Picture: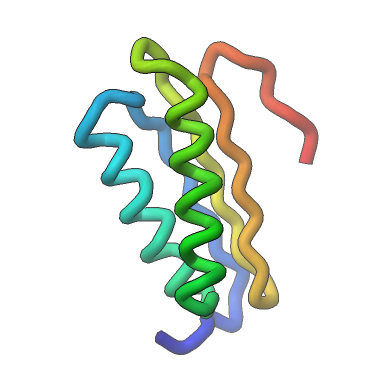
Length: 87
């Protein structure tokens, strides 16, 4: 897929329960593909998202922000009950 010349953002809030965990990974992968990342770098983005989901526990929702600009994807993912970190 060709890299988008514009900045792209994706924000989603998911439950840590299956199948939403897997859906978050699939969305992160598609987003990274759209941003033009290689297969290896896309796998790193997916791993970052899934690691945060797994660390949150099954009873929480997770807010995930993905931003792509200039061939770089920034992932910010936190449980919704936690304070949002500065970017």
